Length: 190
Image (cartoon, rainbow, N blue to C red; front, side, top):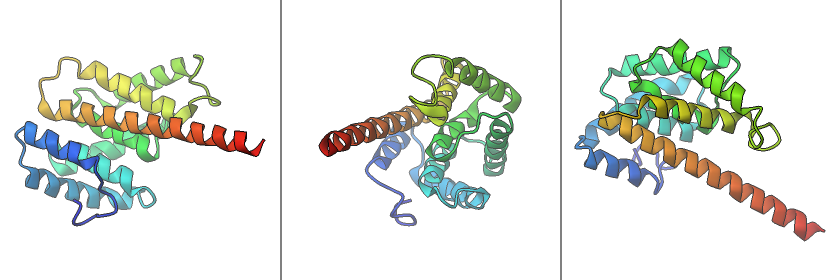
């Protein structure tokens, strides 16, 4: 992936490579499938966020379902959440890729994410002024995903969960860093 998309890959991709090796997956086959998924999804609205698309492609490549099925399923889930008023965008979309192996229908998944989102938005710390709708929905999707994979024996699902956790940690760290920088900037201007 780094040879084809050098600006999209970084040290974090070593985690993906390590998980492939530990799971006994053929790295070349997974990377070829990830590239196929990347190219299929690129024209569907990821022109501005290729980093998210790369994460989505890597996560979905870990599933043994056919590429066409995974891509169509992901696009349908993304649109269904948008239509329901619980849209995920940008880096948050990577969590949806992890649902590819979940044994549930898209309406069931959307209903559960929407219910969690509706519940959390009224809780302290999850409103628009604190974490915001996008990050809250990311947490909701990760929580819903965890309920499906609590007993998972499937390596791809476990690896996808690990990637989702890594993504959530990275986003959280970025937000904390932004808040620290903003407060330092505000303090220095006073």
